Length: 98
Image (cartoon, rainbow, N blue to C red; front, side, top):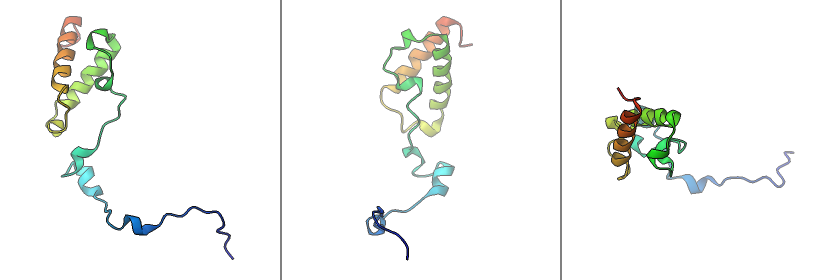
């Protein structure tokens, strides 16, 4: 006889309406824009762009390239265009941006 004492079990009735759309997520389909990127990016820092050191500025520039992709155009927060402009300006001042 199986010992099932004190085992937490998930009741599947609560998940009947859930579906998976893995093929759409992987292809960037209709619900692909809902996925959030990790928050370890420089754009999610509370620090002003002027306080970034050279390494952080290079990382921020890498983020800018990604965020300028049309795939992210609809899902960017309203403050992001100003942040992108600030990063590009600072990178030009530092001589990083060609």
